[in-house]
Length: 109
Image (cartoon, rainbow, N blue to C red; front, side, top):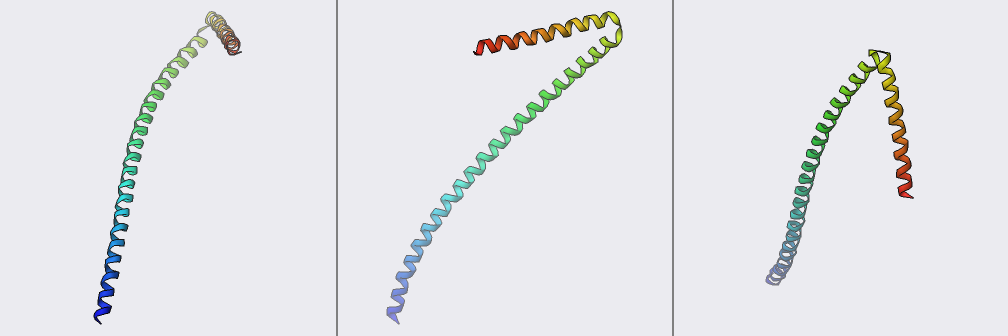
């Protein structure tokens, strides 16, 4: 019986050493997961603040475009003289657009 207890003590020591090794590995993995979770949290906070900034930018742009459309509609509905000016401005903008497209294509070639 004494021999059996001595052999069991060696097995217990070996199992304890293996458990300590596995526990150390688990601690390392848990700390790595904690670090990754912290990094993900910081990235999510950064992305949320970026999206909030974009939201306010889009709202200000929407307000600007709404005002422009109202002024444009007022000009169109106001009379014949303004329609001529509108046509000249529209044709001028279209010509400028095509001129810029041509210049950009020439610059890239």
